[in-house]
Image 1 (cartoon, helix red, strand yellow):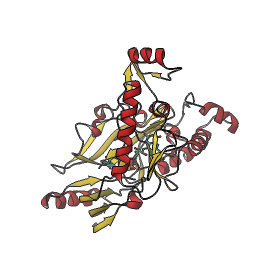
Image 2 (cartoon, protein in one colour):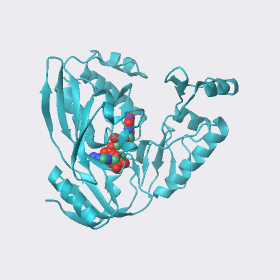
Image 3 (spheres, helix red, strand yellow):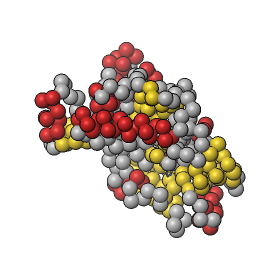
Image 4 (cartoon, protein in one colour):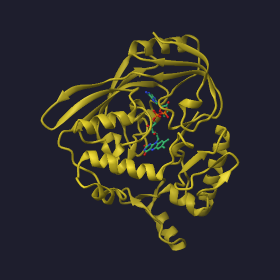
Length: 337
Ligand SMILES: Cc1cc2nc3c(=O)[nH]c(=O)nc-3n(C[C@H](O)[C@H](O)[C@H](O)COP(=O)(O)OP(=O)(O)OC[C@H]3O[C@@H](n4cnc5c(N)ncnc54)[C@H](O)[C@@H]3O)c2cc1C
């Protein structure tokens, strides 16, 4: 059974720290609870929204409807062979607790994703990624419940249509499913991925090349670069890194010094959105109660007591200046509610 709370404060449940309420709030602990909750929501014709760790959402105002929080926990081994182990993880498990569990068990594959805030259930939604690794590299399949039929589903990795910060859950299945479990295949003989950024140098300082040290190195780099939401409200990268035609970069290189980019394929490249924003002079700027972080231009921050609309106004101003200067459209990574 689950409790239904009324006029529920969401401020501690979103990392931006926006002070909003939901009309109703339900935390579910099992698939049966989830089915009952969905039925109640549908019978009453309520709007609904699934909230994980609240680290990739921006609330524009109070939520008129029901916020459902999947609290299903547990990490169970479901298959094993000589090379790998498949583990089924509840949507309500905190992502970094899973990474810690894997590293402590000597299982490789997600150590580069250390310290990403949020829940396991949200990890396939935008195919979380960092330091050259994405959730899709280890996800085998995703389980959950369809809203319209209340039936369970199992969607394989290929069916998830994973892409850069994208998946079927942000497109065809958006608003149609709730994820209850994710199954990951982790390696007993991990291959380290250390080519990204200054990870290799940081690892050398730690000595041994192993997954425990990769976790330590990634955590150290992240702690030195990214603002801690407990100290200053934020949702990590606010925009995606835009993927553009290589010819645009060739044009830009004639006008600007050293435009950084990463090849995606023969024709497309990814531009670092943080660099574009910084070039427009936004890094470290404060506008009223919102601002752009002083160390990381891709992160918009709540300087205290701001509303979601203030963040969105700033985001629009940033988008306009990047469009004006570079002719590049920035797309939000954060889910605006
Ligand atoms: C400081 C900081 C650093 C970050 N660094 C990174 C990074 O390096 N890489 C990266 O990829 N992301 C990063 N993020 C973004 C964020 O951590 C991830 O997107 C994370 O997966 C969000 O998880 P969550 O549980 O908080 O999801 P929420 O923010 O609660 O929800 C995000 C979306 O997923 C949906 N959702 C959540 N759970 C479920 C479910 N069980 N079923 C169906 N839909 C669901 C929600 O409805 C919403 O649309 C960072 C955020 C912060 C604050």
